[in-house]
Amino acid sequence: MQTISCPYCSSEDLVKNGHSENDTQRWRCNKCRKSFQLNYRYNARKQGVKDQITELTLNSSGVRDISRILKINRNTVMSE
Image (tube, rainbow, N blue to C red; front, side, top):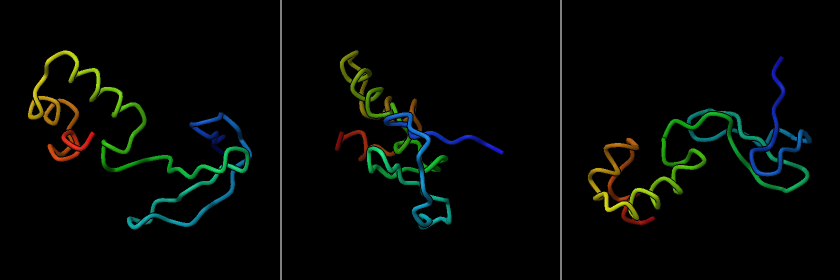
């Protein structure tokens, strides 16, 4: 048995909220009302990746470098 907590508010008051397109279980927090998955297949959806994009950009890394380091698409880096 695994204890699941909300990544946003750390509450353990969660309910199942359907499945994503790739049949991964989605969860919804009753406290902050945010929805999330435990495991993401695409790295850009994981928490902290957008902060890493910003940090690497401020350190003068190029778009191709950032996409290669974080294993995400160039267009995702550009949109962020």
